[in-house]
Image (cartoon, rainbow, N blue to C red; front, side):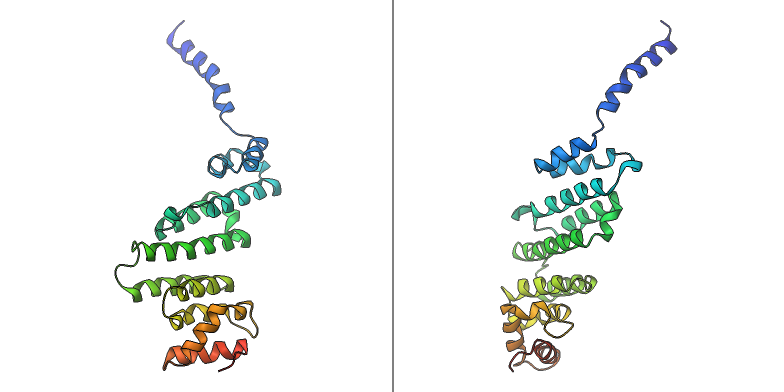
Length: 215
């Protein structure tokens, strides 16, 4: 057998093996059933573009959310890592950029990471104002999701002086009787803010008015 024939023969025998490495939709569904999110997502693009229908999107969305929800406490300390994971998901599966369900899960995980990196001092840089600015910047970016502002406000108020959470709560309360108005942390922050002058006092007055809280 000459060299050319040998190469052709090797390619012929190798082709089925390559094809066998590709996962089918039934394989992704089996991985979803066992909650093997990482393996599922790593093979999500094995499905041909013409077959990436609503069923495929639902499985991918479930896996992407599941992976975020399964992150352990030790994984929730690096803000760049968590944001990088979200960005990677959205780059690989572009439909996730329009998924409000995925965005909600991603925002919730990032808020947890903001707390984790503060507690571990991995993103605090020894300066509370810098960390608070990071929180406020993120909440502002996600202003279309008021629940993120509420979760961030509750997170900040849980271990800092309550009124410093008001900038986050401000994005959660943009109309009268917003869902976040029921938050005990918000009520505590507003009460503390009423005793402050300047911007915190103004925010407390604004939020308290929309939530119809007693002064």
